[in-house]
Image (cartoon, rainbow, N blue to C red; front, top):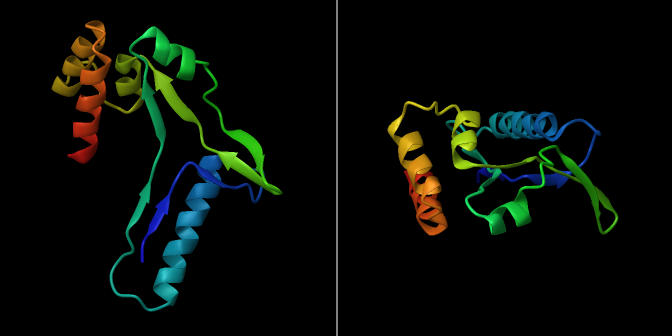
Length: 129
């Protein structure tokens, strides 16, 4: 059994999402060791990332609210980690891919062509790699 941690969890402490998620992962790894499982547990996390390549993308996701969000799910206080939404070149810089790499250059070219389908297909291929 492994842990997949998404961007939504119970808000247990009122701390920022990334702090709570890091604690969740540390506790999972500790429990794994204490249970005597061999090796290291697999942990994956997800983030919501949207490349804004046209007006429709900007209308849906380009609100500039890139902070944690708090809400209620039934009677549980929940925290949703920030969403990364920006023009592709800005997203790549945020992800540590500077403006000199091939990935950055190709994605920016597709974005300039306003080819949203090609951008999404390219991002899907990166994700699978």
